[in-house]
Length: 431
Ligand code: PMP
Image: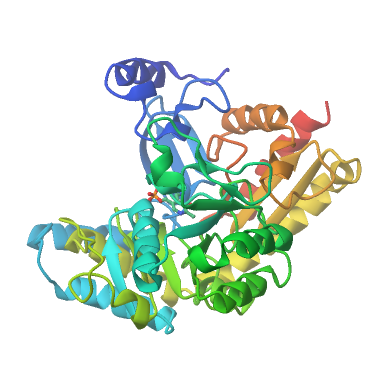
């Protein structure tokens, strides 16, 4: 690498003495792409700066929350003003009600919701609510969909058939994953098999309605309708995990985009404005099982904390004001055009595939077909992605450091940034 990383390297050395692998979340370690992680110092708009003075155009958005770019003035001032008043109460505040009302205004089908501090908490609590409401234990997830790091989600599929879950992480006892059933994304057959075998025991199906943790995979036409139908027939709760897609794809989320309404939703990232906040919610019949209304316990010292609520509220107010969903779709269409212009040739030669929905985009290398599930993604050329990744860094472009991650467009990204993103790919892939 030609880029100066002296200070990053020095800090990472110290970091290794503090944290497992030098990081507080594994993908940040650069294990997947190789090299030394970039240690950042600050960001402004579309730009991210590291401790060595390198500047990057940001296509990661801190994995989604920073849809308005870094340090948006209204979000910053909302945080500053609230911090001077109170950072946490551990008691009700009007701010949490205001943010909940705003979320319900965006997605009116949500009757009740509960704020938590991370996407992981949201998904694990949503499954608990579904289990409490149905009195059943098993739930279905899809291979390659990520729902956070709670024990019950850390399961790999078997041979793609209806398999009882085996833990895919050390430290997760089989007992905690024995009720996790794993299906193949976009496969009706695998869902049919699971329901044929365990239909009466299934409390919930949890799905990323747009899968954005195995690269980017869109649901096949009518696939979400199919899930809706099957879950309804079997009295199972359908959970849309919109931690990624919520407040990014459309005002009403994936229910609006695909015309399918789940029973429960989970959100994170954008609703905290970059601070730790997440939520789960949906139908009153289900959510009223949550304590203190019901017997399903779920709590949090910092849940609904005023700082995160203020940031989230400022964020949602802003994205509504500037009609961000149209703005990002315009930027996305521009990216499609740039990709077609510059990469059309390489795409025709089967060197790569490109896909996008709204402000999510993804390149898959060494394939002429867009992956439809996790197995397809695993067959793509991650080694080429890794080369492209380092070329992006050298050219001042930052994305999440793994070929299994998506790219994010923020409101600040401009045509010249997208052109650069694409031109770097040509340089690497044509050789
Ligand atoms: N669900 C989805 C769809 C996610 O993408 C993520 C994290 N990227 C999570 C849940 C977990 O969220 P967190 O990292 O905040 O626990």
